[in-house]
Length: 206
Ligand code: SAM
Image 1 (cartoon, protein in one colour):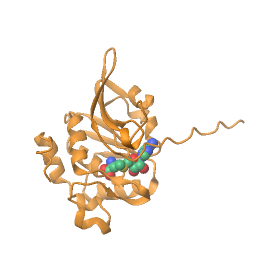
Image 2 (image 1 turned 135 degrees about the horizontal axis):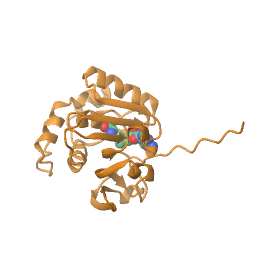
Image 3 (image 1 turned 30 degrees about the horizontal axis):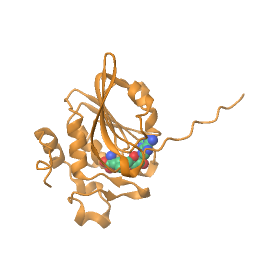
Image 4 (image 1 turned 90 degrees about the vertical axis):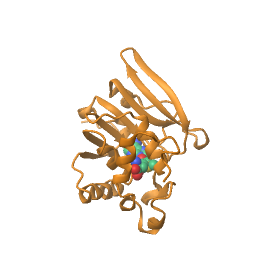
């Protein structure tokens, strides 16, 4: 994979990607394509992202080994496994239970003990563990990032998220929280499956 030629130059990111056996995260039917630079289908209509996109988004996060990182959209678990080699702990949320269970079993197989998982709607974040130094969303949100996620970003923190909603008009965006607010930087065009929010639970009367 020519990640370096495509602008992924951070040697720690490249080393983390080399360490993770991508074939473990790819369905049997696509084993022969596991290392090709393309997104591949996983179960339930979802995808494992293209290696170049994983490299670019990981690099854009500017990770430090002491960081706590929130990932929204566990999917196959591949991106979380890469992150786990670059930071202190990864909290990852997936809304589809079968995908999450498979990802958890891969983390066990690889003996990665620094990933904590949650089943649910990641647009609400993980308030009990916030604030996060870094947040990575691996599904495409609407024009603006979910407010719960920006609220859970530490001062000095960075979020990388595909935004735009419409398939033809998505961009990876980097958001930095400063003392005075949020700075937004549009990075490059991309195509991700949608970030889906679960409807609010009905309020039960006593
Ligand atoms: N990071 C994944 C990997 O390495 O395989 C790829 C993620 S896939 C492109 C997007 C994932 O986001 C899907 O598994 C989808 O079910 C999940 N997703 C979409 N909306 C979500 C939400 N609100 N909360 C949590 N997960 C969500």
